[in-house]
Picture 1 (cartoon, helix red, strand yellow):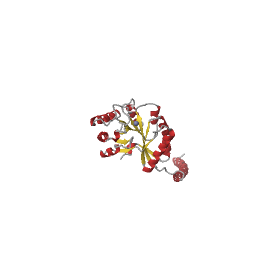
Picture 2 (cartoon, rainbow, N blue to C red; picture 1 turned 90 degrees about the vertical axis):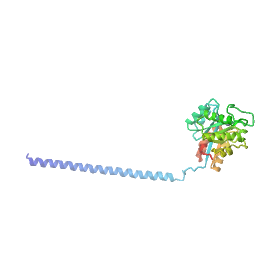
Picture 3 (cartoon, rainbow, N blue to C red; picture 1 turned 45 degrees about the horizontal axis):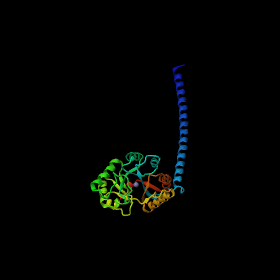
Picture 4 (tube, rainbow, N blue to C red; picture 1 turned 135 degrees about the horizontal axis):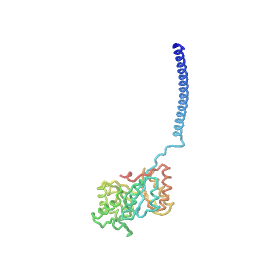
Length: 284
Ligand SMILES: [Zn+2]
């Protein structure tokens, strides 16, 4: 074989390889193009489907019917299935802890770690003689220093608290001397006050306004009567007030029947378009 014919053969072979490669590449491109087109068509159809679903009249976006603030009082006495049950409720709830009890400090920490809001549930003197919490209760006969020292001691015991409401207090919450001293401490510590309104004679909210302490009031008591049907009716009343006013605050207690009603009524009201918010966001 001479040099010339060897060279020609090599050129032929190389040309044949190049031609085969070109055909293969062209076929691959074609297949890729078809795949790409299929994917595009599917994506467009999916987008159409999801748009059609969003605009469908069967699923309108839920509109806000009212905001509910819920304070649960009297935590601190117990650390059991009932108090733990409240820590499983799926809503922004405010828990009020009485100072001076076995679980006051512990429960405050436990509840804040679970994402709830904590306030001090401060014992205030009642018209009747029934009282507990002797080292904390605020009485009309006490001087300013004693009142302020007691309130500061309560916040020292429950340091996670960002505000307070009153436990009982049908006598002391109607007393300007007591309420002014509470207001001075709250102003100094940058905390808020929710008036539980245990008497119509209360001067709590008006005194807080004078001292520029953020404040609000209880609209509905949930469980003055320990009956599930009545507690449910009070929850519905609370939602009606929230719808009328835009927002409303309810107060209940750490009791088994109240827990049972809330386990049902919180999700039911959320479904109806009501929102639960911490009372700290409902102040004036
Ligand atoms: Zn109470």
